[in-house]
Image 1 (cartoon, rainbow, N blue to C red):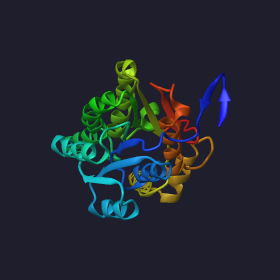
Image 2 (spheres, rainbow, N blue to C red):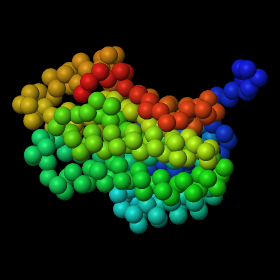
Image 3 (cartoon, one colour):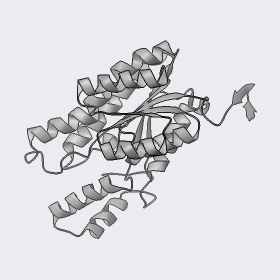
Length: 266
C-alpha cells in the first residue's frame, strides 16, 4: 500500500462491495462480473438468455441472477427486488445492457427497430438508475457506470439508432453526475471502441454486405480508424470498471472514458 499526501491508496475493491450489473452473463457484462467477483465483490446480474444465466450460476453459485429485459419496466422492478433481497443493499450499478441495433440508411430503418434500440440502450439505463439511486443513497453513496460507445463521441453513419442512444447516455451520465454528486454518488460513462466478439462480427458482416465487400476488407477498414490498429477485449473494459469502483477512482465523476485504442472516427 502506497501513501500519497498523507492518504492511503488501496488497489482493490472494498471487501463485499455490492454490485448490480445489467446483461452481466455474457460478453462485456460477463467479463465485468467475473473480474469484480474475482476481486471480492458481491454481484447480482440480469440477462435475457436462460443459457447464459445458467452458465453464470454454475461459475458463480454464490451470486444472484434474474432473467430480465431492461426495456421492460416490470422486468427491471423484479430484477432490483431480487438484487435487494440477495445483496441487502447496493454500492454500485453497472448499466451495461445494450444491443447493436439495425444497420441501414435512416430512410431504411423501421420505426420498430429504432424504438427497440433506444428502449434497450438508453431507456433501459434510466429504468435501472431510477431504482438503483435510492439504494445507493441509503448506502451513503456509491458509483454508477453507464456503458456508452465510441459511437457516442463520433457518430456512426448507417447506425443512427445506436449512435443516438449512445450520445444520449453521455448526457444522461453528465446530468446524473451533477444531480447525485452531493449524495456522494459518482457517475461515469465508458466508451468502448471495437470490442472483439460476436457482436462486432455481426456489425462488420452487416456493413460488408451492405457495401458489397468481403468481411476481411471491412474489418481492415474498421481497424484503420483505430490509432493502435487493434480491437480491445471485454477484459479491457472490465478493468476500467474495476478502477472506477475502487478507491483509486473515488474522485472521478461525470467523465466519458474511452477504452478503444483511440478510435479516430467511425
